[in-house]
Figure (tube, rainbow, N blue to C red):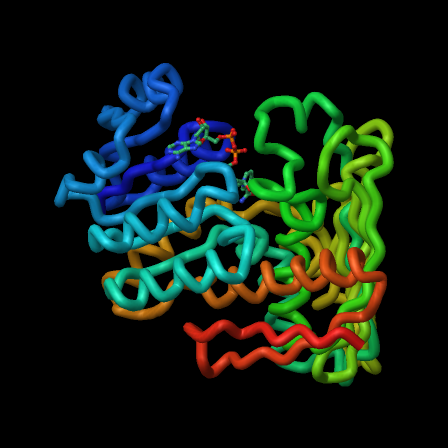
Length: 353
Ligand SMILES: NC(=O)c1ccc[n+]([C@@H]2O[C@H](COP(=O)([O-])OP(=O)(O)OC[C@H]3O[C@@H](n4cnc5c(N)ncnc54)[C@H](O)[C@@H]3O)[C@@H](O)[C@H]2O)c1
């Protein structure tokens, strides 16, 4: 299948490399507003450069568009790509608002194209193992969870491009960094019904939050605490998720959530526990997430199935981030009901408590 990348900045390099690693995938074109940024893709991959997106989209040999532009531009690019019948891989967050997200999902459905959102952490070996344990209910009834993203993004990170840290195009630590972990919480723990959060902009000169702390109540009754920041001195400190169940405590963590830091499950003997820990330790990143996303897109087209991380998944993660923002802004808990069965209807009915 032929791929084209729109937006040739930081993350585009990972997409290009990932495409080059997959049998049957070829990067044939790239698009950016800045012509110089496209030169390496012509040299390294033979990808044709376009400054005009519609010209690129008119190329009928292109099957998939990888959207790697600032988050606030995802919706308009995705809609246009879908209208040309292209399958879509869109970087996280799927978009900045629920309205934009609905437009993307509707455009993909109406044009019968696949829509995948890039949440590569889903494919980490430790994450897949924990998901399997939760699916098998090895931890019994879950009582609560703790999710921590204490990282460092210095002022120079935000100053790289004018869109970074803005409310319209990027958001803060929740929308940009911790959205991956909120996505994992949703995958691990199910549907949220209530959120209460506080946020602050403490150390970075940006419009959005650089610190956020909040609580989620899930439909199951599970409570989760979320603590996220980009202000930690001097570098990334911790990314972790801990799940506390009646029959087990599991923490995946480290500077990046790549390892089992605690794995204590009733009935799981010491040898098996060690094996699980060592298996992950031997290859903590596994196959890079972006490669898995590309491979999964190819399979979802060939097998006529949904991608592993769907537009609806992207929407659910965004909805949670927006609930955190709304709660912090109003200084009130936000409850919400999700109409999952009507994927293309505006799903959010926020109720101020
Ligand atoms: N999945 C991940 O782990 C991950 C990591 C980093 C970034 N991202 C996401 O990827 C996206 C891009 O982030 P980045 O760090 O690569 O940003 P970046 O600023 O480095 O690159 C964005 C590029 O898009 C180009 N661009 C802007 N508007 C355009 C348009 N309308 N048409 C064509 N090109 C356009 C810019 O010129 C720039 O080269 C964001 O949504 C970000 O949240 C995801």
